Length: 160
Image (cartoon, rainbow, N blue to C red; front, side):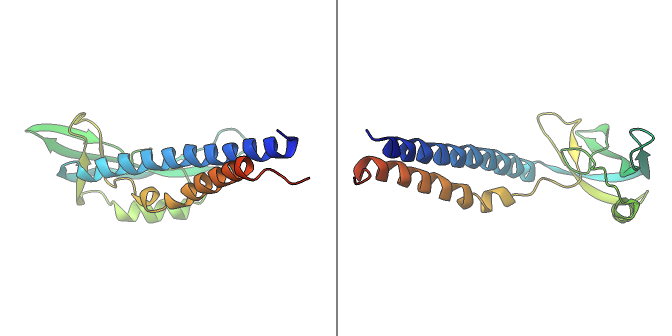
């Protein structure tokens, strides 16, 4: 086997492998989001809503995020939650961004919380997006392209 054929064979496998990895990650994200959308929704009331700020050290800029506390009921038992999204309330460098989010969840507002039935103490106000499932075709192009390169390296080796 020539070095150029071996290179194309390995290169194709690497490209396909990267595509498989990203396809798996996107599929996992889509599955998690689909499960969240199926969680039961319970009425929740925003108990407190404020902007939290932090500064890592004297040289870093301040960061801001919305700090929420909401109450909901699960099977007759009162529960509280803090999360807007499952990954935690995001920090932002601009205070205005956090203020806009704060306006979406004012104190006393009634909203719906998505409650994890397997762990009722875990609830979110916004489930994850299913966008990864709709975009999964993109890393699949790398899988197909990488396998195409690999097959071509075997079937039609480089000419002298």
